[in-house]
Image (tube, rainbow, N blue to C red; front, side, top):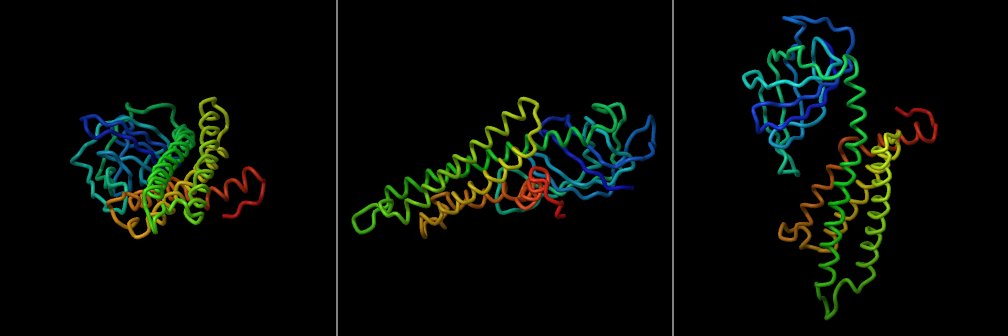
Length: 266
């Protein structure tokens, strides 16, 4: 067995599921009728909507393929993971027990799965960047309105520069990140190489969104810790685009190496 990289997409509210498999293993021998493929004994972690979506590592006897197939529920075990945010989206540990996939369901050419997955990663970075900005703008709007409405000593707290300036900075950071997101999305749509732009968009948007959500909590003061005003929830959710699908440190390493031509640091 070898460890291979896998990308999975499915719906889980119909009987038929669509799975994209992109492995990096090579030289695996086929077995079973017609060169079927078998997965077993692997632990997987996914983000999902009523099912599974994400990255993981699997052990398999044959790889570098993409597939569409029906889930065999008796061969599949899901264990829900409790987490701090993203409550509307399940996260699951997934276990496969002698899970057989017919070779007739192969999508694309053998050996191209990993390249297809890499191509989709740039779109994923644009998507997560837009998500981060949406959170940031929502938090900024909440904080701004609270700063206008909250009266202390007969005047709105938004009249104080200590409240105004951080929110103004948040707006500028969000707007600048949005420009990079648009640039990355345009390059992707045009079929241009967009790795640097997509990674930069994800980094800038995630940081700007997090800072806006953090400042929204601080603007609300003690009420920012209360669920009533929602900003605490925005702050929890803003951690997701910072962490996934790639850490800010890896993005900085990528830009340093691929864009600036500096030596690889990891």
